[in-house]
Image (cartoon, rainbow, N blue to C red; front, side, top):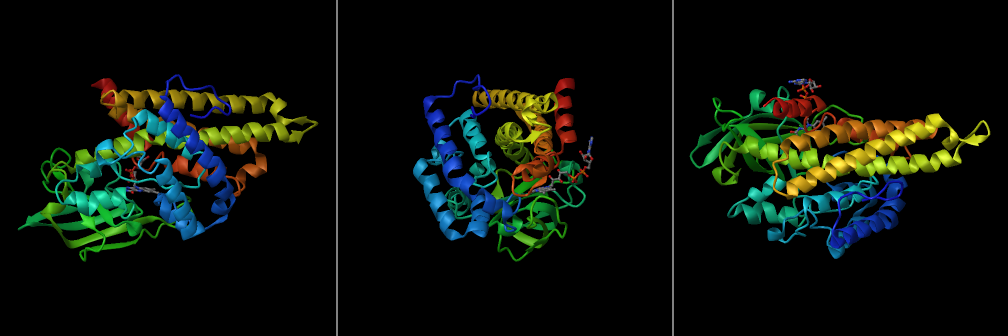
Length: 402
Ligand SMILES: Cc1cc2nc3c(=O)[nH]c(=O)nc-3n(C[C@H](O)[C@H](O)[C@H](O)COP(=O)(O)OP(=O)(O)OC[C@H]3O[C@@H](n4cnc5c(N)ncnc54)[C@H](O)[C@@H]3O)c2cc1C
């Protein structure tokens, strides 16, 4: 809900949400931006790692405690937690407007980081898995991808789970799993019915980090996303998991995975990109007014003005799309295809906007002291992680041609 260089959204946000956005903006300006230089200079943060872990690794325990307390005191900690679990009860539109503010800087702010599908926990799972995650005492990761199963996990998944008494026995290998080594609970998909596969034959298990049948090791592949690797390979070798630790129903794990991807990896890419695009535009406007070549600020050159205008068009169009899909989700509509649309354009337009901002800054655009290259790498990655741009187009085409 920025207004620095844009007009307000056409969506009327309730006053309560506006005041949350103002609090979020104040925290970003007063608490997070002053930490940004040190964060960017550090080689201790990693992509996709829980906020508190990155903050602790870069700044130490005191900063984590201070920001976590601030998050609780302002009510932001439970921003994305449903009301029945003690959360804010805010709409998806409100959550998106607030998250946009926090994406203005790469310095993370601590929230309860609860995958939406964990609310499927039942009975004793609630105490063991859900509540500790809401309180921030335990962390999770999502393990779907395998060496041979990326874009087509339903068809190509090889990790299998076979029933043995009260347990399931898992065998197989997952790859590229973000944050696995830092997670207490691994949400893993395995084939439980070879015939049915994604249509009722894949189950989601909650596997404890200390399960002796599971081994986690670094991927051994360095990416451009950060100085520290944060993707892992997970080996399941006759890994016994109690049938009590099935998340949701047996055979419904693929659907659960899609639900997680629809919200976390698709719709929420909207605010993820919007904050970064707004910052890139604000920085570019500012820089272009100061930087003088051939006797004039570059802001007076049409070539530069058009870059700013193009960034502004992407930002406004994406904000309108994201807010509108969020409002439709709040109204109970099935927005799976529209969430794919948000992911597609937020990551593609986001990366191209930040790319323009880098160009406007000239050599400084490539400086690691500014957040621009990190923003670019994150947005470019998001065209692959969580389902590639091509797969989002496949999903959208399916609806068009249905
Ligand atoms: C940094 C990082 C973090 C990740 N974190 C996680 C995680 O936490 N959990 C997890 O489960 N996975 C994770 N992944 C894996 C990620 O989701 C997959 O890499 C992604 O889904 C793409 O799969 P792939 O790499 O196997 O590409 P492939 O499936 O091999 O695709 C290769 C290319 O072919 C294209 N393609 C494939 N099929 C089609 C088609 N039908 N039509 C047109 N084009 C097609 C793709 O779009 C792509 O361009 C992560 C990956 C990275 C790089």
